[in-house]
Length: 200
Image (spheres, rainbow, N blue to C red):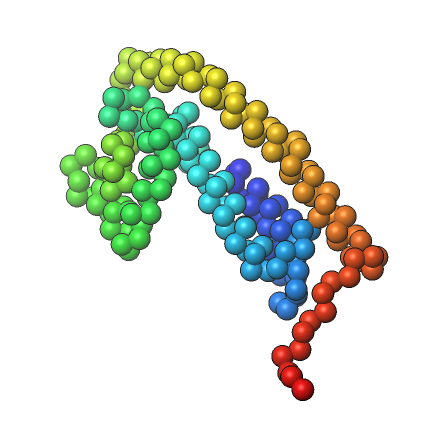
């Protein structure tokens, strides 16, 4: 709901949206990057966005929106919401569960605690929300809230950095890309001519 529309918008801006450009286009997107560079930037941006989404939702709510809708919650060993390190580690450790043909995900079928490999790696447990006693959830939420209050300075610094990027750099890059595109269409900026592969 968040990451995919954001990635589609980013792919359009970077010129990597499927069918957006001719196959032999020298430069793509609003920034005039080569197609290979634009695809690499899109992939890196996709990894960063997914990392941010999974880390934030796992740390704050104990799971992604899909997990919330299915009534599941991820808890740490101390029965609190996973720390940011655990949440990020769980996201990246999922690679170890998926790469060997999903064997790490299937391992929850025969594990007595129903844990996949990535849960074992970062010491988390996935449980049904209704199976967790209310006092434990309240205590876990209180412990998480106390930890959040202690790290409020760090959070405000991070929020400030994100807002700086969103309000200053991103619009500036879009304006520069649009200016380059418009100036190129008007013929003020000329693209480099293709070099022929034949020699005389």
